[in-house]
Amino acid sequence: MPPARPLLCGFTRDALVGALAELGETRAYRATQLMEWIWKKRASDFEQMTNLPPALRHGLAERYSLCPLAVVDHSQSATGRTRKLLCRIQDDELVEMVLIPAAVGDAGTQSTRLTLCVSSQVGCAFGCKFCASGLHGLKRNLTTGEIIGQIFAAEREAGERVDNLVFMGMGEPLANTENLLPALRLITDPHALALSPRHITVSTSGNVPGLLKLANSGIPVRLAVSLHGATDEVRSRIMPVNRRWPLAELIPALETWQASSKHKITLEYILISGVNNAPQHAQELVSLAQRLRAKVNLIPYNPVQGLDWQRPSEDACRSFCRTLLSHHIPTTLRYEKGLDINAACGQLRLRHTS
Ligand code: SF4
Image 1 (cartoon, rainbow, N blue to C red):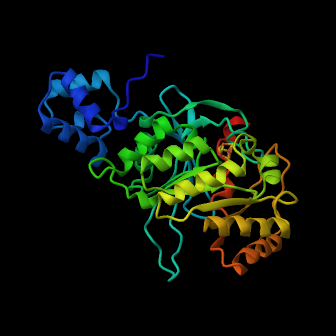
Image 2: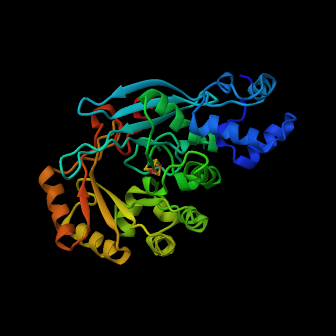
Image 3: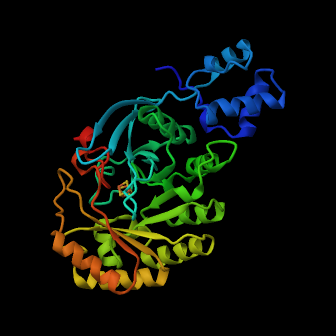
């Protein structure tokens, strides 16, 4: 396979200026034109860039790629518009994304918001015991261009712009801060993708060094923590990451992030029968959520073929939820969209690795 050409959608403005200069083009307005083609008009071919001279278009096409990421398969949930997209990246590896339709609002109105759940790595090294993405380990980090390229590929498939982004697909985003942080800067840059940071959520399983880097970056995105247990005993049983960074390290790091952010942290909590759904677990979660002034998102476990965990009964899930609400913890009990196509939390890549 020929070496992959760098993806221009992952270049900063300065890097684009440098790329143009190497081709003998030093006028500043050319960089502005190129940025508009890449990020505002979502050009998929250099020939579309009709206000650039043909020689410059050819020079760029010889050295760089715009977005060779291609959706090669998709499945649609029977219960809604949720779609799982399988995307081929430059070295023929596959990553999965999920397009999630807007929820019906409180007033019964349908928002037009379109959410994309993107991947940050091919596979995952963190090996959470309930998750399909970590079953085969980590292959590699996605580059900045590949992270952004997923948005362009999904938009081409959807026929509309994505306006809400969650980093909850394959991989641990904060284990790939070297590519994630530049991607977030471009995604939120008004001259690039111009997505509001309020509409971006980064999820982590508890990667403390990555969390501190995100806090120091000053990029005001939202944060979701895959907690799934409010004690070291429960977390270590299902999340090996907790042995590396136990709660005594994770909680202060979350407090550091909180001090730098206006947003509440969301604690994601997958309810697994007989593991973390007893009344005492709910009380432990109440204490932690109160300390962090966090919201809680409860997700009944989604079955993964080859893993033995069970989803609790609906009554058990509702009872757990009521305990949190009775302590005034903002809590949602989220039955996942897309369960029938393995597009729910912890299920990505299942179909293609089994
Ligand atoms: S839940 Fe997230 S961090 Fe854990 S194995 Fe799955 S992808 Fe990796």
